[in-house]
Amino acid sequence: MDEIELPIELGRIILDGAEETKLGNKKGAIRQYRKGNLHIREYDSKFTIHSDRVDPRKDPLGHLLFDAQEVLVGLAGAALGGGLVGKLIYSMKKDSLFKKQQSIIGGLTASLVTGYISYYIAKKLKETLDES
Image (tube, rainbow, N blue to C red; front, side, top):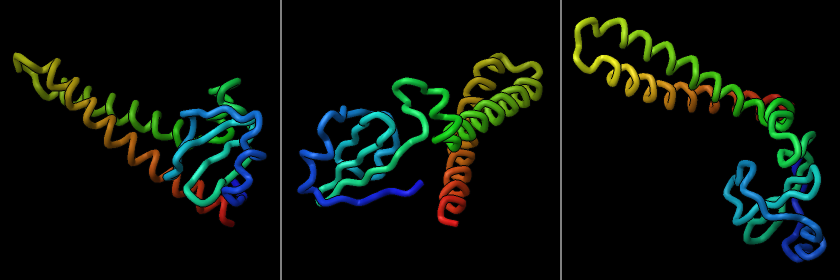
């Protein structure tokens, strides 16, 4: 995804009709905005703009599928990793009084770790593919 950098002085023109949003990776920006399919990030000395294929305000699932696949990979990694570890702990703790609680805590912990790792790897792969 190619981003365009524009000087901060063009702010009034760039932001005309744009809405501030929490949706999207801020990448260190002070604020971010959406204007149709445009995703605008405001920094101290510049703006960056890129066009998403799908506006997440209108079609969140479509945006995940076409513009933010790394988030889907992270969610899948979290679900699979957490589920597998939770089941494993539950089956290993045969007569434990707290086996349900232990399997839930272990599964949640594993889901955080596997979800983040999955997201991070998918994000780096996407960045590498976008550069080539």
